[in-house]
Length: 449
Image (tube, rainbow, N blue to C red; front, side):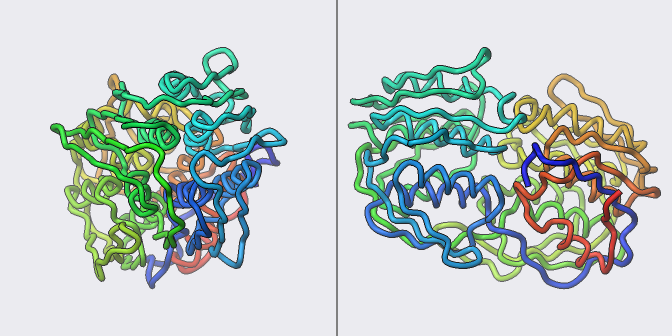
């Protein structure tokens, strides 16, 4: 379901029972996007298991088809991609419509920059409001040309470079999307592309580049890294096993922590250390959260999360942790609202340019349900009482699936039901979320309002 279809108002009430049992969440969205893209750039046929089949990832699959790769669904989560090789993507016959996916739009800008072709990209109403200049400006140094709407927004047209140049770029703000776009463009350029980040961001792109045969060296500098990519490699098809998405697991982890008596196991979750800032933070808050059956699959650490409900305490989260949990702040704010004491989440400027102004949206979500919270510069401050919040609010989701899901989780532990104005677009990121949460909670906690 897209963000342009009929809104679906949803209401979440107190969980009928403690969350219990064993469950799995859909495949990691970041890895799913990249598996399709690298499969399209590789020589040979890549087999993918566990692919997230939400709308965001399906948009990437459709774009790879338009760019000349053969992309075929074989069964639930099972996909086959016959690639074109580096530099082999072809000019699309139609507009690339990225729906609501900022990740797909920004990474594909990197792909297009290194290929001698013309393409036009658009998205839904939400994505067309989001800035693309942060990727188009550095990518222009490859020799690619971008034309956008005022403010660097979609729709955009790109004329890829015929003889792309390698990049040497320092990220002004930590962003895995911008880093990845630069590395994808660098695949088609001779020599070394170098990207410097002051704070380490998720490294799925670097891991998958190595998995497909590229040479990637990473130099640690303080809290940050310098990534060196040798251009024009021959990527070779390689199987990809997609682990469960830790950002999706986050909603069930917090739900199990705040609904009294819960004990839940979420299996097969990706535990990349640059993605697990939320889990680190929750443990600092006193959460009963452990990892069972740790293992490595496809170059990524994986394990089963074991969660037990219990009392939480306020926490001060440093800004340097933000890149490792940038998508999880709304659901962390929900956990903080039930913790005892004040929590401060520092350095959240990046949240202002997500699917919505997620910083303002998170504060509004809390305020609508009787929770004291304020924005202090780029920090979010949440005043927890150690008791269930009042609830009873109507949350304006701003077509942001993470705000919607976080509000619904809050409703499981609030005194009065919590309503979201639209949850239709949750399926773009997490198909089956409502049904899965209802089953874990032992009945119908979430229903149409």
